[in-house]
Image (cartoon, rainbow, N blue to C red; front, side):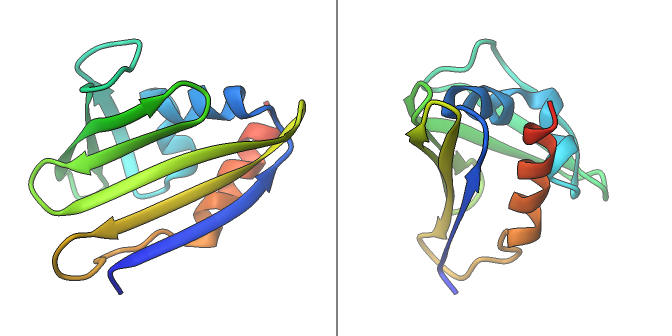
Length: 128
């Protein structure tokens, strides 16, 4: 599989979830495989570098390649052809559709996200 698209409805304003997912300290709260995440600058903008460490202690680096505040951001992996885009589409003032789209330019997705991960995000942010 070269790409995967997952969509979930979240009962929180898009801007709240946008910034929740951009904040490095929040990533381990919803992505179980990540134990730590850092950025080279804050607030995030186009070109910001994110580094995250998994449970095995391996660090991975991503660069923000597209950024539209409260609507969409995209990362590209530093050492592979992996990309991921988060899109936030408002439904009304208190809910939105969150789309997680990941793909590789070459090869296949090694560990694609699952709906369980998005369900965890939904539970965490709806209970803030």
